[in-house]
Image (cartoon, rainbow, N blue to C red):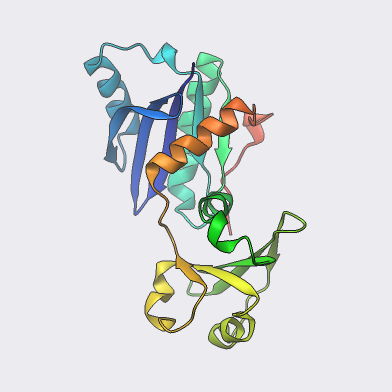
Length: 207
């Protein structure tokens, strides 16, 4: 049996829950600053001690708030060290790939197109055959690039671009991963003992 505390950031809020064997056990109120408070309050309400938690999973990005994830990660590290439990690292891109595997498996390459805070455009490529993520350089004419590669590449694009590419096929927009899938995925990693080896040097994934 396993109780996993899952922490993830979306739309400037911190979402968290505790699952039991991959299924929702306690849902914790979404918040932006008081994660510790609402976690402990939820546990007290259920008359449960925090020591029941067997592992903590954190989505470290990329393509989400680096500063907020850095704060979340600091909290997760503190809990892991004090409770002597492992940390599970989730990756936004790999979550999306696994969630949409049935749709995108016929494509050799997956492109993640990100619109950064400084208005620059960054492309990350995932190669299915090699199972590797490669960072690509900034591309100026992004629409021309998408149209040229549309038949052989599947695209994940963050929502800033949604109105620009309505007529182009093979596109999924960030983020449409149900929380119950994220919970199941972290539980799967827990069963396979896919833990962070050294949490002291674990950092958010920044692009």
